[in-house]
Image (tube, rainbow, N blue to C red; front, top):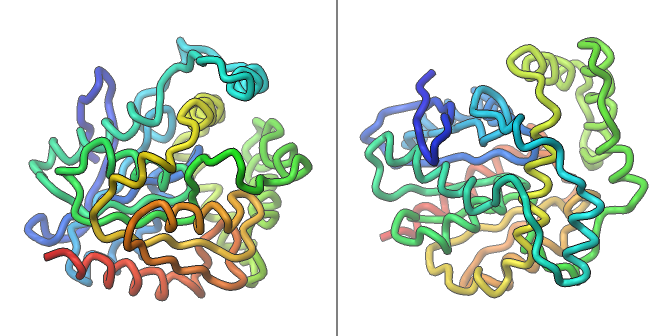
Length: 293
């Protein structure tokens, strides 16, 4: 797979489809490797007329790790933000947005449709208002504005999801599968498939430290809602009604912040993209991209 040198680091990426087709950049969420955008999904989009690009965010997968930055003190960062103080983090969501633009530059792509899930949704929001000339359309999935007034995930869920994972391969995979169920929603949860995906990710790159630094970048970015008002491209916001991690109000707030945005709330969907809803999301994404002149 190719790597691009951008912002003094290396970003790993790959592509699906014909480079002359409509470019579609996919951005994954917190701690997620690019392979979380499943091959089948990428191939389906390529067959529907897109040149699909996915990549590993910094600090995850096969992209550059920020080991020398150490682990941030997240409780201290959150407390400083509540007090209105500035915080020092290893890197920002703006840096991560610029990484994504660097991937497009390496492919000689001037403008792309952009789609992100969870933290990836936050990153594509930043791309859309930071690099508006590079964006054709925006799709933000199970993400939020960073508005502190919105309902948050329960403390109990956060403690479960962010507790240290076992280092042992088998124990790590099994615990990851268990935690995946906590946020999945009420669609049937395929543990066998979840196990295969967790095993593939573990074997490709097990690096839990990066999640903490990515989480610090999210926290430091703060409330994006006023900046989202500058976005003028066709926008689709997708959210699961049963999302316990990024509550549905985050999707509603995102859609309200962007003029003309379409909001798609999917019943039974949690913080996940079950196979049952993938066709609906794909059709909505394609319809959104078709709004571009």
